[in-house]
Length: 80
Image (cartoon, rainbow, N blue to C red):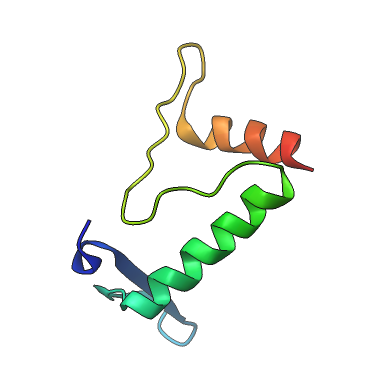
């Protein structure tokens, strides 16, 4: 996937006004490489081979799981 397809979103909350401002931009190749390196390091700690670079990995919510947040909590609970 072209680097321009990866996006970085930043949220900044202004406590004076109570408003949150969001800024979105394409990630640089260096930023994406750092993210990929971190993900591969976590996989290596778990004894899993690194992911192929340049691909987007999606998680399909299994039947019986109410939403994505629930499955992510289950995954996080088993990771440690």
